[in-house]
Length: 123
Figure 1 (cartoon, rainbow, N blue to C red):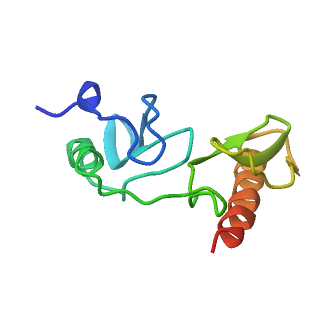
Figure 2: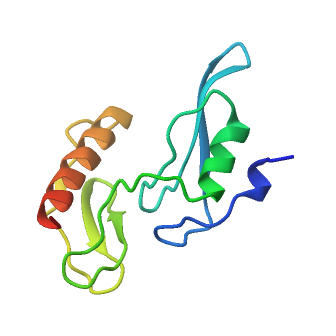
C-alpha cells in the first residue's frame, strides 16, 4: 500500500522533506499532489493520494524552477520577507522580491515573480 512514508527523495534537488497537499471538504480529498518545498517540483493533480505518490516515485514530475543556466545545479527559494532564488551549487541568484502582503497570497505572488524571472534567465 502506498502512503507518504513510501515517498522517494525529490528527483530534482534530492530533498527528503516532501509535502502532500489536498483540497478537501468534510474529510474528502478532491485533489492530491506531492510537492517539494525546497525547489517546488510537483506532480500533476490526482483524485487519489496514492496516484500522486506513485507518480512522484515514478519520476512523473514538473519542475517549478529550471536548473541553473551557469552550472546546471538545482535552484531553491531563499528569504522570508524578501524572496529570491539561488543556485545551490554556484550561488547565482535573482534579485530579491518584497512580499506585497504579509500573508500566504503575498508569499505566493513573490515566489511566482521570482520564479518567472529565474526561469526566463535559464532559457
